[in-house]
Amino acid sequence: MTDFSQFHFSQKLTQWYEIHKRDLPWRNTTNPYYIWLSEIILQQTRVVQGMPYYYKFVEAFPTVFDLAAADEAEVLRLWQGLGYYSRARNLHKTAKMVVDEYDGVFPDSYQELLKLKGVGSYTAAAIASFSYNEPVAVLDGNVYRVLSRVFGIETDIASNEAKKVYSEYAQALLPTNNANTHNQAIMEFGAMQCTPGTPSDCMFCIFANECVAHAQGRQAVLPIKSKKVKVKERFFHYFLLEQNEKFVMRKRVGRDVWEGMYDFYLLEPSESSQLDDLLEQDHWLKEVISNAVILNESGNFTHVLTHQKIQTKFWHIRVNADFSLNLPENHAFYNLSEVDDLPKSTLVNNYLTQESKILA
DNA sequence: AACTCGTGGGC
DNA sequence: TGCCCAAGAGT
Image (tube, rainbow, N blue to C red; front, side, top):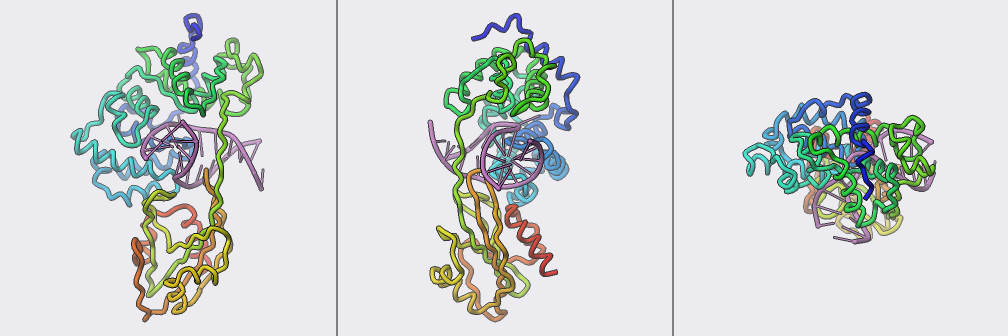
């Protein structure tokens, strides 16, 4: 391991931080509830994207008791549009756990925090250091990037050994009496100065004299990250079934995207298909449509996720008022106001927005 | 331990 | 346009 004794890494870093830090709302508190809330929101999420959600959650749920008392659908509805919805489900579970098992008081150590759902090694270190100044180093995407470049670490950050290798550096650099500010500083430095791609002004970086990547002109290739995501293509046919001013919505269950969110009756053929072919495979829907009017057939919606590209066509179906509709499992009728209140994916929301304009 | 889970912005 | 990736965690 590199000898850090003459490096003054933390001193330089925290001095830089005091000058350049952004004034972010969760930095003006040590309340673990607000720290925790902000950290969950910011997982894999940019500050500008998460900020409005932080304000919404603080206003709707000022304390962990308020959050614990809410329904899961209410929490998901507030999370709507932010993505990675397991964060919201775990947020709610953890709030209830803190109330039920910790008497509403957040655990105050890294090891105890790790037991909370949705709180992994990064988030536990963040809460422990930001709220309690416990000397445990945070290791997130920013820290990987800064350490890789400054010390010329070539370990693939997608590999299994990366966490161990980088953690040793991160922990060795952490002053035991200033964990809070140091951890904030190294992440802020990664976000604002040592940015992904090619940073704009490495010339004036506080580590310009020591940085291995700068000396070798390798900022653009460090940190090394190998794995590329395979994108699976899927084909959705969504049927918005309407009868007597009410709409059929389905709660998504199981191991798939948007668990806990609501959508419509769905057919998913393995390849792009025509309606006639779909109906031959689904006699329930065929019977429904034979007692209905097709109000609208949407164009193609292409929705891109990290691992999936979903091609979707929506069918707005008005079922005859006197037809007896026996709904499949997890499906139920909702009026327009209730539909609006249900948590829905951005794909479904984009469609509803367009469809409401067309029908207005 | 590889795979999965969203969305939006930048270039 | 397609690709990267952004304060990761669960399985």
